[in-house]
Image (cartoon, rainbow, N blue to C red; front, side):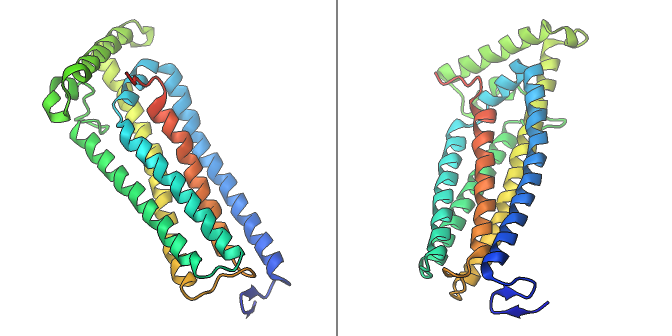
Length: 257
């Protein structure tokens, strides 16, 4: 195999090379859909089985942080799309600037996610021995709860305990033990799904760093822009996954009042 400029030896034209690379990326993204699809199916089955505990768990997520991350990712999709357009139309100077903006927005997303994970750790919502769905209602000052918000959480926990007592499958457990167990399942899926998504974001950030370094050499133009195009496809896929994660984890049965 040899290279002539940006053309690898097994291809006759840059267009053929780009079509092959794009096909490979789409095949890869299909396997990613199957991968995430298994997690979404697991979440759906368990959500149907334990709606009360999953609803309480969802209400304990910070909606403001989740909404902020959604806006950040939508903005990053726009800057990524503009970087692809800039490369395809030969606007070389814009490509690295837009890629840097995309990387910055992705970094903001990961930073917000770190804050959210730290919040769950402080509120004893990390699955494991110290998990306690009632921690915030019993320690309101530690979670910043007061007034109506505290009353709503206590009421929701009590209703959840009563609902679990009526579940035939939990007849050998107390309502609180069952609620804690099922809520822990929700947060296990929450951390598994959002953590896997964050891992894909980190990989995407690494690809963006590489693209930025190459773009600063004025490598991408109207004739050769395959790497920017394919990384763009990957980035948009990761953003779309979050568009599904946000309503599933944060909005279903959400108490907005």
